[in-house]
Image (tube, rainbow, N blue to C red):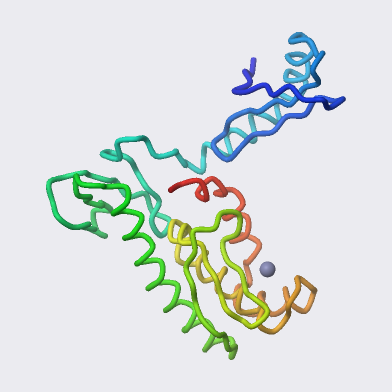
Length: 220
Ligand SMILES: [Zn+2]
């Protein structure tokens, strides 16, 4: 029997269920809906719920706890274990997939480190990708905005969320191709996707990865 993680009562007329990025089952129910009716509904939808939860949990995203020591963070698609130790600066061992954080303000130091690396990586990936696509852009900016991984403004200034650094390199490359394709097509028309497909034939798989790992947008 599936259990809801949260039941939200609203002035709606029908029952609705959703499985969030972390596999939590959220039920939205009318004010006067009985618990029995809610559970009957969940039973009816059990297969769908279990499938969605398995998919989300398979993504392996956990929200960071207050104490970051021992927490595993996604970095370029790989899980990296965090150790908070007596050190003065952030350390990273890419072979062991370990990040060392100082005991003083570990979270703030980590976010700053992620943003600096995001800026360096996205700037380089964008430049290389633009050369391949024969595309030109104005600038690369790393933002803390949630909700979109990347965007391209009317004057071809590119913006990326620093949290894209959690994604594998080929997914980052897809986002760069996507945004650079917008310098040629300011929409998601057929011509736009044809351009994307020239450089990332399996763009649908990358897009699915980003959707499935949407919970990464909630990390820091
Ligand atoms: Zn787009």
